[in-house]
Amino acid sequence: MKVDWDHLRYFLILARAKTLTNAARIMGVEHSTVARRIQALEQSLGMQLFKREATGYELTIEGLALIPRVEQMEQSFLQIEKPNPLQGRVRIGAPEGFGTAFLARLLAEFSQHYPLLTIDLIPVPKTIRLSHREADIVISIERPKSGPFIITRLTNYSLKLYGSQQYLQRNSPIRRVEDLSEHRFVDYIDDLVYSSALYRLERLPLQLTACFRSNSILAQQIAVSAGAGLAILPRFIAVDQPELQEVLSEDVNFTHTFWMLTLVDLQHEPKIKLVWDFLRKQADLQQELLMG
Image 1 (cartoon, rainbow, N blue to C red):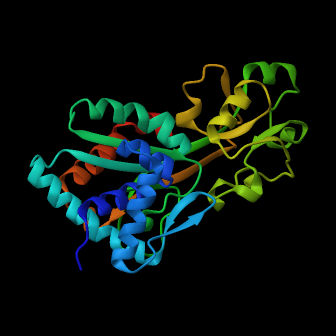
Image 2: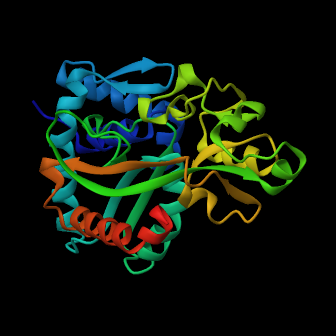
Image 3: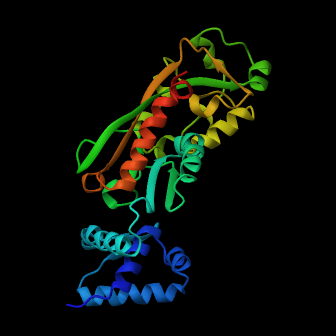
């Protein structure tokens, strides 16, 4: 069986880009060309590699099994074409707030030292599936129970209750936890929460209802800064917002953990190890920001 390498390249790009339009933009071709290449590859292999979902093109079981083999071919090709091991792409998946408020600046500075290395940062309010090759390194608020992963505790981080100065001045004073029952809150949309670790108001010994809800932690921070109410926010997001004040800092103070993981077969790749070690070092150096 003879398989065209160009078809396999299109397969990898579509697997990463998820849509024909995005893949076509990356390859600099029409989306019909991408579709034709994928169809030709599926015919030559005698198997379906993608299934069409609402979110785009998702890999079938056969497609997932093919990914590591094609990526190995890709790496071999890149090593022949460009022997420098510290080049190529490293994709990092992270929770939205941590990725945007903490990692983006650090990775931007890091990337300036390695101009041949492309850093893809995916900060989204959902779980990034490492097993589906959606990223090379994933930072998660939950530790996976099983899988072919290398896992380390990246860092703990502190969450506290915040309100804007404007909100606190125009509403009743808060001297104890019981006073919170008279206030408005900003929180997650409970039926769209992707992790039980994000249920925060439920940990307070009161029946509290949010008046503004969003599954974006950054939208929550903006809403609190605009005076919508109080919210439990990570310190690393709130600390740079001068309009926000801690409320009941001794009574409302939670600690969560970020875990970092990669696939076993990626751990020894120089570019993966380079980024992995950088993230661990930065987490250690930034404990004042993360924990206070």
